Amino acid sequence: MSNYLDELAAFWDNFAEDYEAIQQESLFPIAEDLRDFLLEEKIIPCETFLDLAGGTGRYLATIQREVKEYHLLDISQKMLSIAAKKANGNVQLINQAQETFLSQHKQRYNVVFSAMNPALETKQDLLAVCQASKDWCLILRVVKDEDHLFSPYEGQQKELLLNERYKTFLTEWKIPYQTKRFVYTKKEEISRDFFQEYFEEEFSKVALAKIIEKNFANNEKATNRQFLDFELIYFHVPKTYNKNGF
Image (cartoon, rainbow, N blue to C red):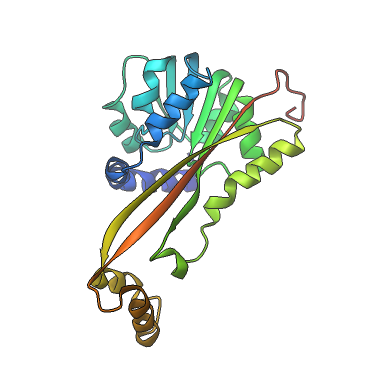
């Protein structure tokens, strides 16, 4: 790999255990809900399924039973080592950069799936994903991540807008697509001390004191409501490709 890819692999290797802990602590059953939706839409069961940037296998455990061959690709060997503990005998774990794999690997899959993929940003990235499929492409991202206490004081996350970019590309290519939202909410108690520590480097003492007064008044804790929306873009790829892609 290039120096850049080596550094990227090292970053995700170092983050792998923390990443898995975050996934395990999540209260949102997106993997189960996605599987149920794909079964309902008859997208699965299928013969071959490619999970791009599949990480530690968040979706592997729920979907692998519904496919004959499940290929999970990730640049991080440590991510794949964690995923291996969840894998059945029909799973192949592939340690390679996505761009390299898609440019060299000629197999086309019944379903190509990508969830929260950091290597899917440009039109060329999406084209390569489409060309790896012979039927369905599935792209899943968080498109809304807001709460009452923290979001009003934080900047907009650009990653939340990526699905709109993909839709623009698909429209330009005249590929019809559908979407499905998975909407979740939760609430938790946040302490005044935690909130103050979280923002103490972002605001002056005077400004932060006013924010805390507004949200906590004389209370030591406040209820924070979180709203998390996943959006699935799913579409059939064209049956044939021309020299420019479609």
